[in-house]
Image: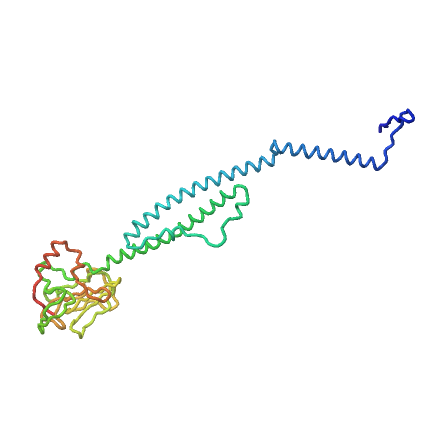
Length: 319
């Protein structure tokens, strides 16, 4: 180790400097602190102006995540636009066709309650974009769920509508070639037995004894028996959807209670049983157990045929 000297002005001589252990420790500590400060400063300077390998990796990863978030946001916005078009068709086309109420936008859009969701994401860098994406995905999921439920309902309505079209009593129960064979119309008329005014709850079709009688719509036979109330041998068919039909004064009943029948199926033969003055079929259409004019449901005739049938209706009353 090199020796250190200093000049003594009193003796005018160079004398060897002797350091105490304490001073040596102090000098060593100062040197170490100086080196540490230089090292830390150099590191800070380097990291300030130059990216470390770890920093480069983190930056690249962050940029990739930001790009993926933007791509997902674009896809979500595109899906929302497509779903909006589907929702519009659903409200103004599909649900209108089947006479269903449209779904309010407040139900389709939904909402959130309580604490603000994903609030913790705002604490991280780029967290606001991630939070907005999460909220949009939640909204899209809810709207897709509501639309799925709506399609389930529309599908059910479509099946019901198809079944309704088969069940509505829409054809004449008797196949007649001459339209003049409707003998008594729906409404008030003179009773053929006591000649007093009485409401006639159906229409009468005349024909030969044994003329086939057809079901005017799909349904289930709920009555197939002789009636003591004046209808004679009668069949009542429940068509569902609030519709029933009555076929009275039959000579024969060819179906039984509980039997399913199809539109056009022969259910009996024309006769004159019960309170009747001649061979005919008394036919009724009931909606929610209230009689309505059966002629309103004969959609297998065009307007000309319909008007001709009314014009040629005979005045003879048979029951």
